[in-house]
Length: 399
Image (cartoon, rainbow, N blue to C red):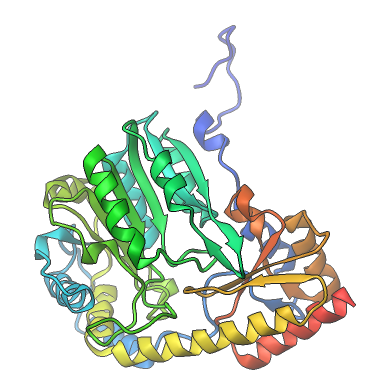
């Protein structure tokens, strides 16, 4: 029972930290458009195509085989072996299979990792604007977040590396990086990896990377012949205080499956296992079976999606740049175009007006922090026809 200072019972409520969390502004805007069949929806971070059939068939076969029981907290052995092989192929170095844990979604991977690392009052540095879960999870845990903002320059979002390094002080516990970044499409430059890793090594600062978009990158192919965003995992030693979280959601079109993974130093393994048990116990076995097939047979599908997203990005950005008063930046990875309209500073209000007046559903930039205010996010993981329809609606609204 909760009481006031005089000892009188008050209404039952959550603790103050949770009550102080901001509700999702993306969801707030989307709720304004739900139930309307005339709205073109570009607000959420998922495509309009289902998971590839061969992955769905793997899950159905696993269900038919009765794979409906608990698995190991760290994940089924076959999926962890498939992830180990995938990581070694992608990053060109060896990985200990015990450094890999399976989670029920990428967001769960972020939660259990931060539960393992953070105490109340710890200092966390985050590169922003960013998907709000990354900065709200530390708030839930009582940590304090220092934001280092990206800036739009010459048509792209950029990071002032010196400013970031200066923000990572000896009193910092954790650095958070999402690259490619949601919502801006910024990608950590390859040349920035070594200075950043060495700085954090020297100070004993943990690094947590959200790598969910690493395969939806629009750069050059790596030595292994695959395109991926520059990763700290490729440079790190097994003893580094580096944790990579990832998910099957984006590159394999598996948003609803809720399957992710963690790559962490062996020293975290036992405690991550405890937290996985206390959060979700384990991911469903038949979902993990689908993950194995996605990794072992899905490379062509991932590359096809990447090429498709690069073309969609170019289509949206070119269309936006043709509109009067619109500034659009070019993403180096991810699923989003980020743009702003001259004189329209309240992104939530603009997004709601676009729903009501144009039937156009976009995410407000304010959802990703103060650095995103005045901007709008357009998920371009849709058909060309849908994109062209959306651009036409925006043009008429602006007209």
